[in-house]
Image 1 (tube, rainbow, N blue to C red):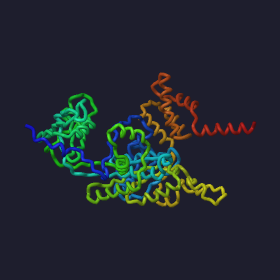
Image 2: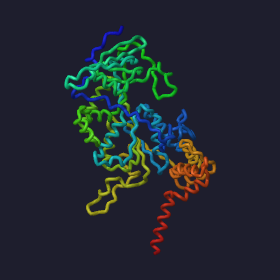
Image 3: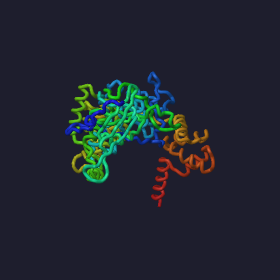
Image 4: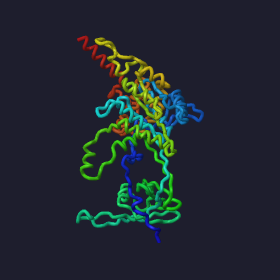
Length: 487
């Protein structure tokens, strides 16, 4: 005999006007399987004492820079480095982006990491400071802990009940749904509102899944497939979870990781109605939404109140700005102010410029003069440079280039002979590491076209005739210019 049915009104969603939304849209479940430029980077490759190993976690070389980032990582974990940015400087192709990605790998998936390029701020839709502000908010996490009344268990029954549609004489509508839940301690049958059934359909819940339903909002969360069905198939991509313990109706502590940007977007773009005009309006609107400072201040007040009550915990993440010299004076002024904010992430900057002109200062001279602007190290203002801890990256040696090329061959599944590896290492030392890595895939295609399994020296030499590196291309252009001057 089943337990008394739960009231449908208690499980129906109850939206409240004027309340800050603290639940972002569900994350995308799409998987990326393609090989990227830094797919081989798994961490900083440091020993337990903080020293950099020769070859570890996909990293080769840059020992001093890796040890500096390891110390920086320790400060991040202690929470003592907010507002003091780190600046990575060095020639192109020396692993500045790889160092930032390794830092994100070391922090783990629970710590927010936002990467951007300096030129991204120049948008025709929103202001430059708005782009920087949204990236700052993406890099600040909020871990919300709530104790809620939930109904949790394995779904044993899922029966929607239909009734005649009172608004028209055609078709039927869902009047309620009967859901049976089972735990180790017992079972319970619930009579739920039709709106909860819509949430169940969105989660694609079927019999045998383990779910929980929040009693006060009616929100449904699919935890996984019950491990009782683990031997049903030989191979499948399901996540199996054990049968929940205790009663079906219980109080449970739920932990949710969101970013402040998620909260901004959830409140700046509330979901419209389900009628055709609302759907068409959402499709036509499109574009990027600019969040007002007033809304952010209201969200910050709610976040501060949650933190004071012990409901939430602030998790400062890492914001990585590559090619930071592409920002202009307005952006640097905003950066100085944002770094002094109590809600500031850890900021890592990267630049490959020496003494260069700060963007936005080209016309700061007297009227009628041809001012070249303010020149500064790395293209950053002096007041921002004073805040930074600067880490230098150096050019790779030939042996390090050979190790990197050999490692990328394994990642991309290309068989390269020892002599061909030496030739690619020589090419990388003479030109750049990036050019040597770009020759790998074409060399594999050439070898397969000739019916060979292994890439040889002749394949690398042939590619050297087909493609020019930056230095040889510059030499060709200079020869053309000199020949034109002769004639």
